[in-house]
Length: 64
Image (cartoon, rainbow, N blue to C red; front, side):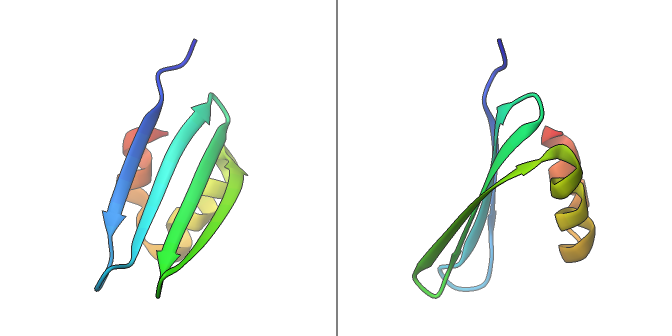
């Protein structure tokens, strides 16, 4: 059994990025930007690629 882990990064204004670990290799990534919510499911490798793209790797590494 995995303990659910989540990190929420507050961006400029009311925008935010939330990453929740659902299973060992499955993550829910939720982006709130200009009042619109985008949600995707990613595996560990996809999440690491996202982290390097947006330079949030240190926060992602805490939950991965």
